[in-house]
Image (cartoon, rainbow, N blue to C red; front, side, top):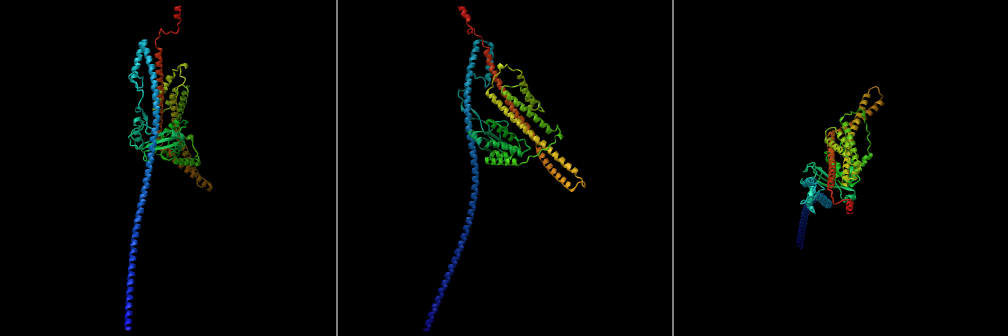
Length: 582
């Protein structure tokens, strides 16, 4: 019995042990599975983190690339908008010019028809009269006019009653090139796109193909500009510091004045062109165009950063720069000018050049005054003032020869003054307008001469300041004698010497800056002002020659009428016939 119980207990114990072993084995297998699952999850997590990091890097790269592409697209959109607005302005200006040209053609055709009828009537009367000398003169005139394209329109050579639009030539606002109306659309696309050297400018002074340092600026205005009191400035350039070849901005009169002041402050060693005040819109546009053209023709001014900001920047940037300039002007101390005129040599090149500019400016001003008097029909002999301009030239320059010729012809024509009853009371409106433009151009040139004179004045003052402080330094050094002065006097003298030496060094550096490129500056100015005076003199002589041609043609017509034969049938007094009848 006891043996059976013992066996049962042993069996139960074995079963329990086996159950425990199986339980532990299952627990171990579950633990191993959990460990394997955890390791697998960790590996998956690391792989996921790695892929996530790569995805983030790729997203960042794509974001940076999209930002760059967006910036490029914004720039391209800005350029396309500029080109679109430029093309629109060209089309608007072209339509206006076309309307004006059509009105002018119609008026010219009507006037030509009237002249043709009068001419035919005069010719018929001459042939009826049988005056052989008058017929010979008429034949000579007909032969002469037949050879001239702008002469009398003869039979068989009359112009079409309606001139086609394709035959009209207009001037492009951007490149100043003469183009046909039929080619306007294609030319606008080419002119508004990047400059590839295919366009040819109108002015012969500019190169036919763009050069690496080309900078052309055109100032115009539209109806919108008139309302906003602004001017459109279109720039075409190949300079490396400009990102695009074409820019279009709208600037106010204050912006032009800021540019002139900023250049003068930043570059005292340069002759910065002046800005002459005008009241009319056309006068302002003409002056701003001349101002920017002078700057763009200068080798140093055309590369200045202020000009780059003016031609390409936003109005907010210009206003900020203008505020900074006003702030600097308000806090800047006025520099004391020290000059000793007694030590100057009157034959020094700078002094002689300054005297020449004073004389030139004086003679130009006198010429302006007498041209204005001439415009009001109170003229005296202009030859005197042209003679003064000629005699004021130190060498045989173009200006000397041209003004001498003008003086001679004005003097000769002045000796043949007609009777007051034969003088023309008023001048034609177009001639008076042209003379006003000539006066405006001469005024601008006179102010340009003043700007050059101001540079020489700055050089003269800088020389005087340097000599003053140099003499002060020498005087302090000579006064230094050891043992004779007290410590306080010696310290005061040392402080005085240090101040004089510092001022002398600054004056020397400023003088060297002014004189470093002075030779080129004066040479460039001399050639530029003579070229501008040449253009003005050409306009003046052309205006006068056209006026005398018109007067001569009128006197020819009067002469033909005076030489007409006397008709015996048409009499003023008929009393003889009445007496015979009685």
